[in-house]
Length: 474
Ligand code: ADP
View: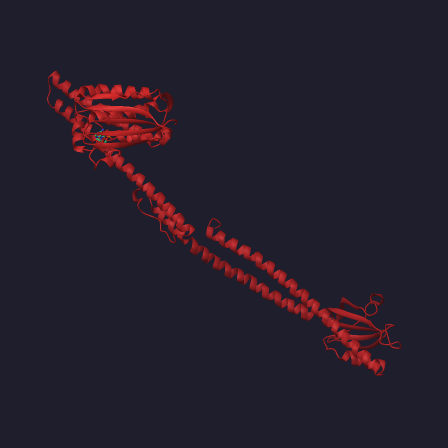
């Protein structure tokens, strides 16, 4: 049960409220009780004063001692016991309270002339022990009369009764308000946490197959609304990358299917009839060889892209000279270009030490040069140039080829994108060198993994220019 946030919130709420209520009630009770006891003492003092004034007046008018004292104490209510004693301790007059309770004088030496002495006394009345508050005072009436000891006592009962009533009230009010506020707290916690319950139920039903579903967002400005929105954004990103992966898988299998079906056709046709000439077998094997090369290239590209998906961790950096790498790539591309009658030219570059993944950067340059040579008709040329600016190195590959149509330009860096799919597939059936539309996306990833960029500088009917920029230091 304590595993529920709702229960814990309610318990905390009720616990803190209980502390506050109990503390407040105790303080209130202490204050009321102090003031009730002080009132009792004040009343006794007042009664003593009344008796003293009356006694002084009666004696002054010549009334004899006993009737004067009786008159004086008769002024008081019957709940108070009163008595007048002479200085020797003899009782002059007395009015006991209801129940035969007497006002007894205090010990002689505890009284000082004029002072009011207050004490609590217990006496037996009708078989019961009663506790009363007693006030006494020694009064000198005149040179001939006195001193007299006046004693008034009052019961604690009204005070204890009143305090008992207050206690009973608190015993009801405190638990009742705790119960009420506990119920209120429970209801409130339930209401405010209900969006969380709804969210978790919906989230429970979301899986890879229905990632387009979203969590309900109650109030987008409160904490839970923000949590739901953040979760929804996460779902959107996951959905995007899932659909990307699905597209990638579909495209990849599509690409792998073409060479495989070419090979199957070649073997089927060759094996259909027995006793073929050696030349026919050689032709079939040549086709299979071309297609396996093509398959290896696609698989290798896909492997590189899998490395791309882990980001920079996929790099194996080392120190080398970038100008030498550019020369080497140009030389390799030059061999292929020579067959086509295309010239590959390298602009002279200063010695450029570099720290990066040499293998990957070679692949980037070869992809760019391959594309340039592939799309440049015989008699054309491809230029590669390495230049250093303030904090970056720029490698420009330009050709005098066919150019890229404007509507295709925004897509050429996408995986498996080819400008003319039909033509490229047809070529693919015959040439191992034709790409699967992965070359530029791999080249761009390589530049980005080195903290740089790869852009299409320009492309028109007269040729295209690709610009790769790399930071001088990785
Ligand atoms: P592939 O590996 O199939 O060549 P890329 O990703 O390298 O795929 O290129 C994507 C598309 O961009 C290609 O289909 C090609 O038509 C076009 N392209 C790339 N480079 C050039 C270029 N230098 N000149 C003309 N078209 C190009």
